[in-house]
Length: 440
Image (tube, rainbow, N blue to C red; front, top):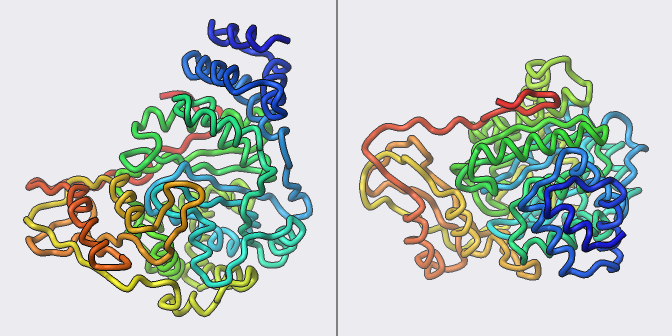
């Protein structure tokens, strides 16, 4: 095969065969195909798209380019969850213990954050001593013993995807639905999941700003899962404002603990019950979403979800005392309230910009090598639909100095829009996308 012919074929809108996709991805992974030719192919895909079969083939070749985690020794159906990312997205910290307490094994491979705030691994490392560098054997053993483990992704997982993503990032081809869908699904499949629940965000703080785009991505990933033989469902959820109130690593851990006590923010609780209900149902532990969510609520009420979180922290070397005494988690020396200069009703929040405020304080990374500060971030006091009086606290900035907080204050105020008319907060759950669903 000639690479230039495959580029031309895709440029002209033709479908590539399974063998042609294998030739391209394996050739690129093993450095037989140069960046400039893969850049041209990625742009052709960005402009012409791929059909469902092509996208599924691309996903499988990404998986085959590296290690596949074997979870067959774990008893039961392993259901993985993936979020397309947002601001204050603490769901894994709540969802893992919640679902594990309901009897479904949770074997979670997670990553570090790049951008607004830390990833799941960073948040868990807010616990002193927490270790995510588990061996695969230790990972499997912990899931069988406690029902829950969280491990950092290995460098050997989907190396072709990592290489192609880095190329897309510098060639204006990131925003291609087939390339995004195959990138996400390849990692989930390589991680050993039997079934997959996807949380596809839409809104100002999401990668997919428009709901139509989010729906297209959700459908594409569900179709890939169906073709590859993995039960897959997607929940489209709102990210026009941060999820919960806390944005920042240790701050989000504290909010997760409150949620596991049954005292967390309504939106975070609702999303975790919705996603968890799908996970429990796919695992065959409930006959309906309603039954599954009732099981999950019971684990909040009886304390078993919180106890499962304690077991996770203890098993992976973290300071388990911080679960019951959250003040043991990293705390910033300065808590700086941002007051409203006027009265009104919160009509909108720029979720992405709020995330960037937390990043400026040190809660996120500009590059993969950047250090992260677990203690800093933003804790909202008002959200969309809330009434604000002049002088009310809109948020508290957790910072290392007053000067750093003051430098972020004006930026934060620009993220909040106050009006005179009452508004209804946007619905959190927009749509459930399942295999075989008709396009609306």
